[in-house]
Image 1 (cartoon, helix red, strand yellow):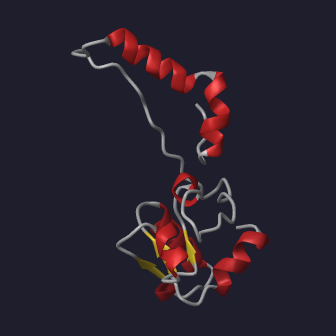
Image 2 (spheres, rainbow, N blue to C red):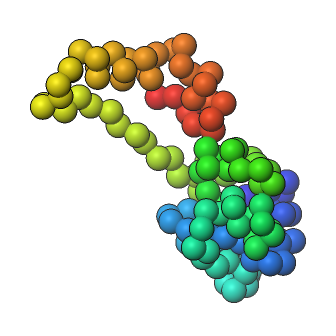
Length: 126
């Protein structure tokens, strides 16, 4: 992890909220660097909410889940070696009542004009 991202991880005293695939993956990586496993713990709510409330000092989750939470600040994306991307496929169901409208909706979501909105919400257009 780059130094500017490692420092907040090392300084976090109240643990970090982790849930899903990313937290355990980071925990294993930090254990290899001599970090205390007890510093990483799961919370029952969204990581950004746990950070915003003060329950945790640092959380790892999808950027799109951090941006809308007041009191949670995005430190930045994780380095490529540990970053996990979620892909959202889209398809028109065989029984769609209006397949043309469904296809038009998918086309609008994937159009170049939608890319700035997708990025602003913390996602990567595909």
